[in-house]
Image (tube, rainbow, N blue to C red; front, side, top):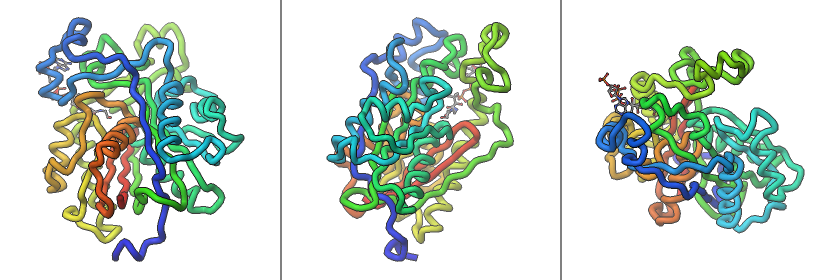
Length: 332
Ligand code: UT7
């Protein structure tokens, strides 16, 4: 099956991102946590990350990333008729971060909601937005991945607190015009082992209490080794299935933007897919793992660096808590 036989789907008219100005490198971190620059670099590839200030919330990061994406797309707030924000660190449980940024951006009273698929969230949101645009009822969507992971990191857990950072990325999707075209989606989940990566307290199962605070239940908890193995497996399977369903092979892929979690995960994925490492775009050394923001931040950086040439095939692929996964094909 060739690409020509596919019904055209959404166009990415513009992309933007924002990371907070505070840079924290591994050496600085190792003064606060029992770790070292050598351990973090060799086990993860991360050299530094950005942290928002106490006063900055996820919506503040999302707001600036969205302004940048709107400007890149040459769109005005009035043009937007759908806002979707992917995040696991919303400003508050409700209202949604999407509603908060709608108001600040001056977007009309259109549909706004958050989705939660952890680190796969931005790709899930692209999939949802594309479906809504394809229905013909929506014309121009603002899709955002934004996180303030520093707000749920446990500084007493060195196995997690060295991995994450804060940031936001956004894309404007339209159903016509110029720009990279979304041509295929594959999203999935396996909810059989939810505690591999979770934030146990603060929801209806374990509402905030003195007990939940004492148990540090409002912080992110993770079984890193198991997540590592699952990540490589689910991302390679989703990528292969998506390529094959769209009539492509791994050799057709020109660029991959993987979820920016760990350089060793990216290397294992490269081996498992038999796609050379130089086709993978990585910036996790600068930002750490920013969950739902990681792919749009990387996509924005790679776009601004003119890495993609017209006609090339791109693959975005992510995994996250749930476990969730998602792969998206893009024709540049
Ligand atoms: O977006 C999805 C989010 N999650 C992920 O992507 C995480 C996936 N998993 C990983 O990236 C890796 O499993 C980690 C980076 C989290 C850990 O790497 P690892 O090679 O799996 O290390 P490990 O958990 O097997 O720990 C090895 C050793 C342990 O010491 P012992 O038991 O061998 O003496 C840990 O206690 O490293 C120790 N360790 C640390 N040492 C210094 C764990 N964290 C640290 C640390 N600094 N920060």
